[in-house]
Length: 583
Image (cartoon, rainbow, N blue to C red; front, side):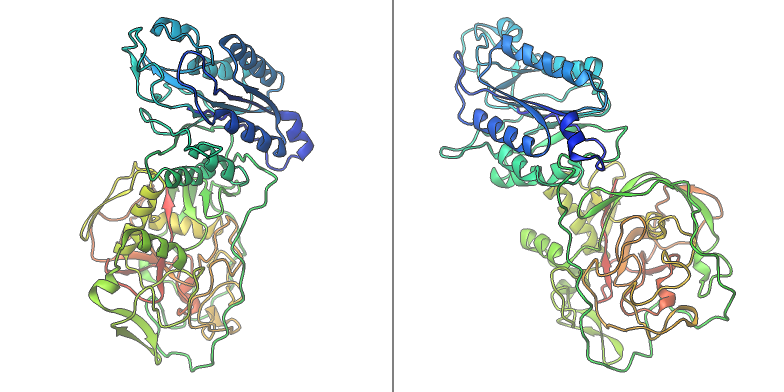
């Protein structure tokens, strides 16, 4: 398999510093003398090396090298990294790789094919590479990527290669701050590329991903998806290892992130505002003195860092969940306030969009609860009505692909999460049997946030009514501005969703946490306990699932960070959507 060793430093460093601290060794072996030759590894290595140079790496490109040469250049590479503890390194190997007696070996062009013993002694051990980086280089961070899992090159040799296994194996006892990227799953074979193609499928996908300045572990997901597409799902890359001392590592820290354009709110014909509003709404309460302006009441004071265009890493911490007794509009189910401690998690930067949901439906043929039952609830004529043709495709107002999807039930949301997990090679978080859904909390796949995670992420370190302070305007969120919070100035009532990202993000990089659409959470509706909790997930059963955040239709009071709403799992309104999370 191919191995790419990538080290990423702080994204704020100047390009000249990257050039001084980023080192790459790229090896491509085609012309084997004693075993089957390969078509593309030299092309792969050459193209990867060229791309790395544009990213500020000092690159040593080696092609068709022998056992002695391989040992020499790898030793030189490791020693160079050892001279600067803050250095980054990138190691790439394209060529034959084998697993013998559970150990992985990278094969030089002159590998001895007489028998297993000679093959081992004339190859380079992946374990040797990993130990050298860990114990000799000892630099800041390392990523190892392998695209060397071809068919067994010794299969037809007479020397008794009885202990050669298919593909490569996972490396045990990985050191910290080392990421190993494999071009295919353990025990599987990676494609070299079809006739007439310059690169292997994995290299094609990797070259595309190198332009992104997202975190390397997030970029890997797009590389894996593209590799699977190019191979008709027969080759699924994976990675192992972790970065313990870096929250963020980008292969291209100078790249430009692509973000959805912020579009102005749609122009809507004036219409008398509705006299009713869905829960949660409360009658105006008596005015109380203003609360203190935003302050931090959590132990997670470090800023949250966006890790990709669509998902944000939320650092763990402790916060106070619920609303204080003097909060205007407070409901009884928002008490008692209690301390909640959460582990780190990822959360979608935006609610799931129409375009994203459409890809799910097109890929699976999925039919939502609204489509199966033939009805959904929409707001027309000043009241909510059930319409037989209302569903996510037809919410009774105009939407584009960058609007949040609506008229999706809780059941629809968990089905989407499982599909996205499988689509990206992750373990689905849910086991779904009709309305009976079980959450495997150890799975790495996508899921709905818990109610506690949602409120923690919404508050983003604040303790005020909204993450914008003690007031929120229709320039900050999409809601019914005819009914502002706590007798504040009126604003616009758009009567429909707005494109995700139309309003500024909160302090942790999350958009639309207030208004636009109610967002489904995992938890069953239940009373808050009186004691502190760690990673709560709500009651074991109930009649309704939690909804958070308020919507385009709600009064300002219904957008408060502490507001709780709920609905049955099949419920669907044109004011309801969802947002993804994962461990």
